[in-house]
Amino acid sequence: MLFFKNTRFGSVTPFGKQNTPCIYLEVANEYEALLLENNLIKTLKPRYNVNLRDDKTYPWLIITQEAFPRIFPIRRKTLKGEYFGPYASVKHMYTVLDFINRNFPLRSCKLDLSAKALEHAKHRPCLDFHIGRCKAPCALLQNEAAYLISVQRIRNLLKGKTALVIKELRLALKQATASLEFERAQQIKQQVDALAEFHNRSIVVSTSVKQVEVCHFAEDEQGMMLQYFYIDQGAIIQAQHLYLERKLDETRMELFMLGLTEIRQRYNVPVKEIWVAAKPDQHIPNIRWYVPQKGENLKVLELCYQNARKHLVEKHLNTKPKDEDSLLLQRMQHELRLKNLPRRIEAFDNSHLQGTFTVSAMPVFINGKPEPSAYRVFNITSAAHADDYASMREAVYRRYKRCLAEDQPLPDLIVIDGGKGQLQAACESLVALDIFNRVDVLGLAKRLEEVFIPGISEALYLNRRSPVLKTLQHIRDEAHRFGLQHHRNRRSKAQYASLLDNIAGIGPKTADAILIRFGSIEAFKVAPYEAWVSCVGKSKAAILKIALRQ
Image (cartoon, rainbow, N blue to C red; front, side, top):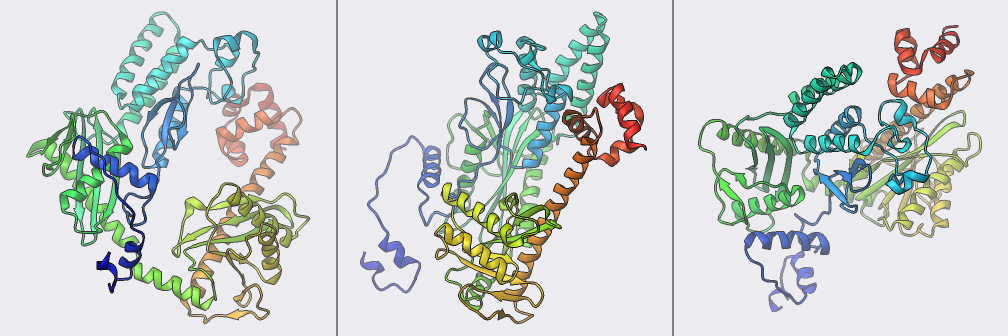
């Protein structure tokens, strides 16, 4: 270790101090070595392996292994069943799930529906049955054979075999028509039409491409953006991009194989061929490398490159230089007299209407940028009428009590929207949880943009043009926006519920059915009377007509 003794590089010195004896494992080939490296980095999280250290997991759809299987999203493979995905876009996953629930409804309850349990249990159909999202196998209104047919169609749909499902449904349509089951035939026809429309929205690249993976990349000075397609039956089933920074002196192909291994491990699709721009030297068991040269296949590879290039350009447009972010955080630490560099900031703001429908919003900023996936909102229940201090005390206590219980990391800085009173209330909760000395906390009063710090009697005034003040204002305004949005939603929902609750003969199930079908009471009012009848029935539609149109 003499090499590290007098080095001028600060990052190398701790590296030398933290060295540890090494062991090595023999594997069959380079691809298995990459897989092993990937798994060990995610498990052990070594400090200097940045590229693959995150344990980010994309959601999957699982079809459970039980009597009358269910389908729902899941992020970790902890249950027995069939997994489909992962989905890089959560929005796309829920679009697929919503389509399945509307056209091939499965149960969502957690009841034990084994044959033995159904012999003795008596269940009533729930709301899902009444709105067409379940056929009530719990109440013996659907047998297991018919249920499993729907499960198999969902399975084929998620595998990209849409044409096969359409073919099966058209055959069932002919059989229903021949046996004069016209109502069932109409339901099947609606499924066929919906499925055909859904299939048409898929990105079809080439009908001649059956089942392959396609991977291309675009480079900049710092690293490489990989674009990955999984294509089945001519349609792009999965698309994922991944940026890898060049940390040492990795060659282009080494970085490419590192990223491809990471993506393939996430998806684990059963293909035998990967399309690339140039054949790597590494061998992957049971996989053939293919370099398209012309025609439709080359166009598919070019499409993959265009997407890699697009994502790389977007990354440069949306990312500020790291030095600029670091400089801002250091300036915040200095000007606000903080113990810690404020990499993670959590803010709190209360919203209410004369003390009612009180919510406390908590946006999160990481390295000076909002992190919407980490935002939280608290419905305040214990605070007295219009008691802003008690609301703040409750929200802060609930947030960090859960952090401690779940062993989550604490923020570096907590920003309270308000003056000394709100700050004092927040500090009381932090003291009660014994974490007051572990985090920085401050209050930002809006009137004069005063900054209050615990233990300092006088307010701190920052320069109006200071980027630190601008950042605090942005955090405070985002907390206000987020809180106001949820306050309005809560108030609107309560007003909607109270309006229908006051109508004799209209219960909560009917109100829920109206909300799901029409979205709002205003939309329900302007809808034709026939739509009312189809939603709630003739008798309740008549009651609502009298009550709402008076």
